[in-house]
Image 1 (cartoon, one colour):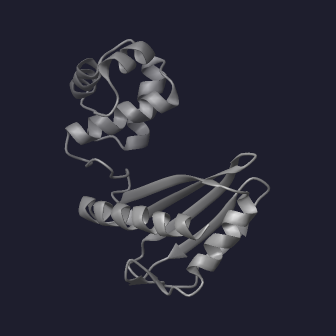
Image 2 (cartoon, one colour):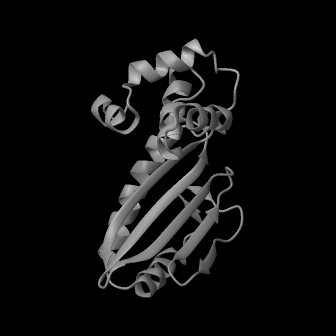
Length: 179
């Protein structure tokens, strides 16, 4: 469990063992993730975030979910970096960095990557041949600092998560070296 007993107790009034025992006694394993979380919010007056966190740990305990696995059954890998510059300059640099690439980590694109912009965000998204999706999210963190995040979703195994995390870590290092 990534959150300490102390933090859970402070926020919810119970430690992990108490929550997991309570959920087990209520035999909630037949309910969906959404239903379990809603029941926690409704019956125990805890916030949405804590209900999600407790539900995830319960699902791990009953064998429904592995670490890093979403409630849909897929896995996600992420990486982030704070970079110097403006959102638009980093976004343009990322597009230039990726322009001659036809794959990520040897997995070809299923279709060309897409770019979108909002006032506060810049997005670069790629659907890969293995049906996984790479999402790059860029935002202005401070006047001269940019938040650069990668969320790679629809991975099949925890092993793929480790492989993609290593890939994205190296990719971000190489990209940062071009700035």
